[in-house]
Structures are given as structure tokens and as C-alpha cells.
Amino acid sequence: MTALIDEALAFGRGLLIVRDDPELRHRVRRAVTAGELRRILPGVYRPADAPPTLRDKGRALMAFDSTAVLTGRAAACLHGWEDDEPDLCTAISRRRTRAPGFALAEGSLPDPLVISLGGVRVTERSLTALDLVPDRGGSAIDDALRRGVRLEAMWDALERTPQRPGNEECRRLLHDSRDRPWSEAERRAHQVLRTAGITGWAANVPVRAGGRRAFCDIGFAR
Image (cartoon, rainbow, N blue to C red; front, side, top):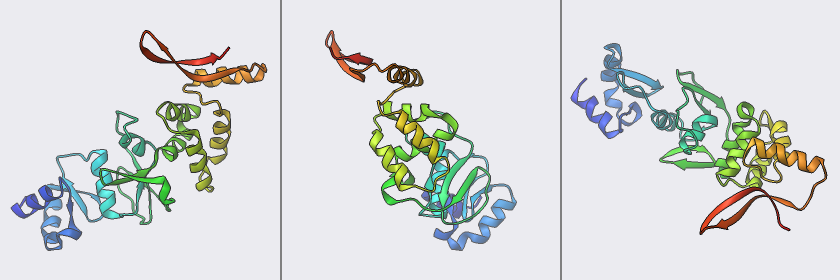
């Protein structure tokens, strides 16, 4: 590759955005033909010998559409909820295109449900949890509650996105999570207690023992 392309890649932290360096357009085409550069999204390129990370894909998507938002497992990974990066970067975008490694759905989200992580727009944690429900069921909500996501915030995210597929299942699971289970086992235990009419208990009760803080999955105050 030419020194100019190397310089543009260094400036873009591994990405070359043609919009920022239009004078390189012809050199980029030659580098692609020579197998030196690979297109990630229209107008965004990366060295062919360096597979893009999820964050690279996110940055490329921001260059392609600054209003786009990463969703689902891609958002969960950038939130630090997962160690293994998904092969597919799912996102909502106002621009339509097809590219390997991306699945873009057309649309937009309310501003309160979008945050920026390192310059990449992703769904806020409450909506991220709901996006994981179709694959993970109630455990997606349990995990979110354990990570400190408020149940009220998930209800708010649900109400702000009334046309989202899977909302009925999310609504059912959020109602079933009213006692804030942190695992599938706790969720089942709560169901059994409620069905049996047993009261006087609370979930995830903080206790101190030996100078350390712990949580009782289910505690009876008396």
C-alpha cells in the first residue's frame, strides 16, 4: 500500500474512511483490487489481513451512518456483558445496505434508549436486555437485574418501543420478574411461593456476616 493510505489508516485507527480522504479514492480501489484493503461498509475500508473487531465494525457503522445504533448481542458485548464477540453485528440504521458481518434493520430509537460507548452508539442497558429475550428468555432479564439494571427502566424501554417484535413475551416476563429474580432458579422459586400463597418474603435480601456483605436469594424478615 502507498504511504498515503498507511497514513490515512493510522489517522483512522485502522479504518480508512473515503469521505475523509476523497483524494485517495482511486488508490483505495487499486488497493482493494490488489487484495490489500477490504471494504467493511460502503466508503469504509480496513487492511485485508486484519479481520475487524466488533468495535471496528461499530466505528465503521458510525462512519457509514452516524445515527445507527448497535443492538442485541453486539450491544451486550460492548456493555461488557459477554466475552465472545458475535460474528454478526446487528444494528438499527436509517441507511440500507448489505455487508458481510452486518445485519441492519431500518428504523430509529428514542434518544433516551441510546448511549455512546467509545464513540459507538448502542442501545441503553434496559433495551439491550429486552433485545436478548427472544434468544435467552427470562434469563436475559434475570442477568440484567443482577447487573443493576432497574426493572422500572426495562418497563420504560418496553413502553417507548411499542412496535418491537417480541414485546408481548417481554411484557409477560417483566411481570413475572416483579420480585426481581437474579436467576432462572430464583424465578421458578418465586412462582412456586406466589402460587402457594406464601407471603412475608423478599428477594435478594442484603445481609452482613463476618464483616462481609452477601445476599439471601429469598429471605423471611421475621
